[in-house]
Image (cartoon, rainbow, N blue to C red; front, side, top):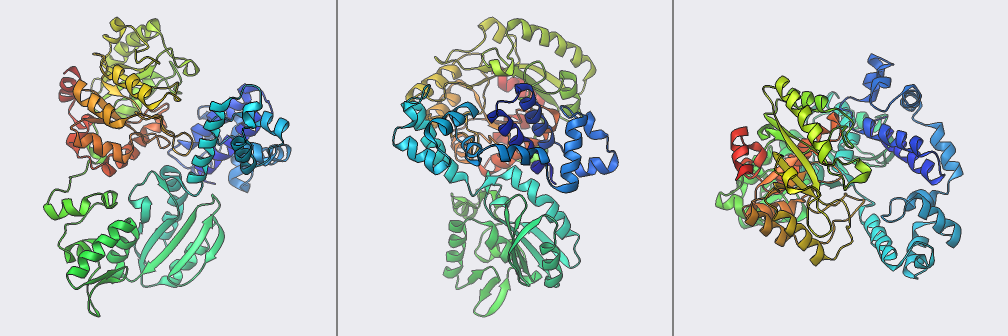
Length: 571
C-alpha cells in the first residue's frame, strides 16, 4: 500500500470512531498518524524492509499503530476499519465530507429524519427539514446545500499531490520495463493543475506489447477497462483511472503536446497549423501525407512559428499571443527559492520542535526562514499570547547561535479578527521580523464585510504577508466570499506580500489570482505552512502554482537574497 492509502484508511477510522462517540484522544491519535504517514518522504514499505521497528519511532506512531500499518502493507486491509464500517451506516461517513455536518449532526440527521444518502440529505435541505432540527437553522442549511454542490463538482477529481502519490510507483515500474524509450505523465497532471481527473501516461516504445503487459499486470491495478497494444486503461486500487498510450518515437513530441495541453490550447495550435497548410495531431506534423515534424514538442511549436511553451501555461490564457510576441515569462523554479516564510512548531499546533524545524531547513540549504506560530485566537491550535511569543523569542535567540548559515526570522501568524484588527497589540507586533496576517474564523461574512475586514488588516503598519488569502480547502471548503481585486489593490497600496500557500489542500492563491496579483505589481511569497518537517517538501507544489500563475523569480519575494528580503519587508 502507498503512504497516501494508509493515511486515508486512518482518516476513515478516525471518522468512524468519532461518529460512534469514541474517546477523543483515540480519534486524535488516528488523525495524527494519518498526517504523519501522509507526509512521509519515504514509502512505508521501504521502512519496513530496512527496519521493522523504525515505524514505532515516527511521531504519533507507537507499537499498536505500527502493527496495524504492517498488516495493511502485507494484506492490503485493516480489520478495524471493516469492523467499524459494519457498525456504521455508509451514509453517515459520506455526510462528513459536507461542510457543516460533523459527526454529531450526521447522527442527529440520521436519527431524526431517517436520512441515509447524500441525495436524501440534499432533498431534506431543499425542503427546509434540516432547519427544523435543534441547533440547525436556515444559514447552516444553505451551507450544507453549497457543500453538497461542491462535493458533486469535485467527486471525479483528486488533489494533485494525491494523484502523484498513486501514480509514482506505477511510473517507476514502467520506466524499468524493457522497451521504454521515453515516458511522461501528460494531461492536467503535467500542467500541474490543482486537481486531476484521469491520468494519461505516454510512452515511446518499439515494443508496445511488452510495455502494455507490464502496465496491466501492475499489482496496484484493480480493474482493467480496456486493453490493446497501444492503448490501455485501468482503475487503480485508489479508484484513480490511468490511461496508457504507446506511440513510436517519431510521433512522441506530437503526442506529448496533444495529451498535455488543454482543449482550447490544442485547438489554437491546430488552427495556426491550418493557416500554414499543415495538419497537426497526436501522430505528428504533416504537410499533405508527409510527416515533417513531431519527434519533439519543440518541433510542433516551431512548425507554427512559436517557441516552446511550458506545460503549466498551456491553458489558452494568452500564452500563444505572448509566445508570438516574445514575451513568455521565464518561470520561477524550485531552485530559485531561498527561504520558507510560514511554519509552525510544537509551541502551538506543529509536531516538531523549533530546533528540529531549523535543522530541517538547514538541510535544505535555505538562506532564511520565519517561525510563525499561531496567536491566541486560534484556540484549537493552542495559539500563543504575548508571553508565549516572548518565550519563543528567547528560544530563537539561542537557536540562532547554532545556525550561523541560516537566518531565523522571528514571526507570527496573527489572526485577523472580525473587525479587521489583529490578534496582538502593536508593541508586540513591532518585535517581530515577519508578521503574517490570516483568517481562521467567521468564513460566512458577506463579500463586502470580508473584503473590508481583510483590507483593514493590510493597512496595519506591521502586516508583511497575507496568509492563504481566500481560505479555501480544495474539495472540502470553498473560498470565503471576498473581492480579490480590492484585496490585490490594497496589497499593492500598502506594500503587503500575498502568500501562495503550498499545502496541497490549499494552494491558495489559485493560479488566476496569482496572475492578477503579478499583473498589478504585487509581490508574492511561496510558503509551506509546514506543521512538521516532512511538510517542508510541499514547497514544490507552491512553485507549481506560481508557475501556473506566470510568475518569474522576480515576482516571488523569497527568491531574494536575505539582505534584499530584509529591505523589502522593512520598506
